[in-house]
Amino acid sequence: MFKFPKTYFTAGSLAAISAILLTACNGDGGDAAAANEDCEETYTIGFSHPLGEVDFVNTLKSYTEEYGAETECVDVLLDGTIESNLESQRETIESWVNQGIDAIVLWPADVGAFAGLQSQAQDNGTAWLTYSSQMDGQDGSVGFDNEYSGQMIADHLDEWLDENYSDGTEDITAAIAEIPSLPPLAGRWQVPAELLEERGIEIVSLQDCGDTSCGRQVAEDVIAEHDDVRIFIGTNDDAAVGALGAFQASDIPPEETYIAGNDGIPEAFEAIESDTHYKASAAIDIEHLAHSIVDNSLAAIVGEGNPDDESPYHLVHPDDQDLLDEMKAQFE
Image 1: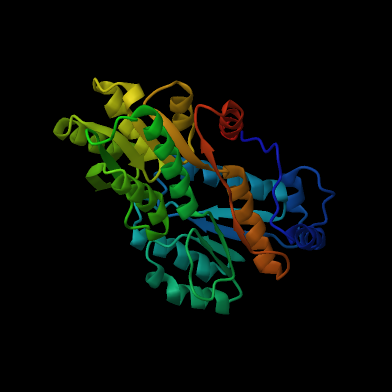
Image 2: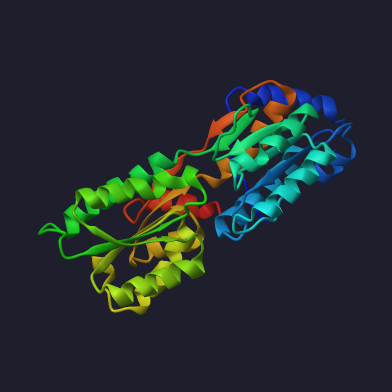
């Protein structure tokens, strides 16, 4: 059971959402299930993410579904697409469009492949919102700043190198796990890559990887080929956590190694807190993100409030225990 110690609403949306839900619901604001039975109209929101195999995404879906239930008069539909499978995602979105649901929040595996469905959906009165991407004519958006995320990791890595390799970095190399099929995330790997180039650190491995198993394999391969690899940057924490397993199985000392990822998952937080090779995560406020999926959709549906929002990142590292505890609590 997920807990929501804080409630987030996008700017200007609270009044509009409250008004429309009061109109739609005859309940007195009690139990969500009972209130849904009393709703004159229930708003249905579909959320589709192309990487359903990623731990962070599955937790986000759970948060979103439960927040929809807590909001009352809202049903959340979830897509089961994994590994950016375009055919699977299109099948789900086409089904939602044909059903005429009230809003679709989509991170398209291929933007161009959904333009026709977007037009059809909007012609039918369905609000079309994007997640971590942009499409012409969209009705709203949910996302986060990946350039900023990449810069957070790059700045932290830069400071770590100054402290731990003050005599120079010419004797170490780096590996990066990218996800080129999702170009909106590019800032997560490109900005740290620029920092590595500036520091004269060779990137000996740049692999397409977004889950734990491939993160482990990529790291094992690069460690076997390059005994001087000391840096691993994951586009997400899933890949970075996988890499951590390979580094822990090697004889590379944790104090010489910098592993970092993005998104924020419990395994990453635990590794950071336990003084391992894992040094940082650019973690998204997952509660805020889940709430935005629902709140922004409602704002787009009723035509009032703000249907666009960016969720904040927090740089989680061993020197800020309060933040570490706060981010861990979101998964309890």
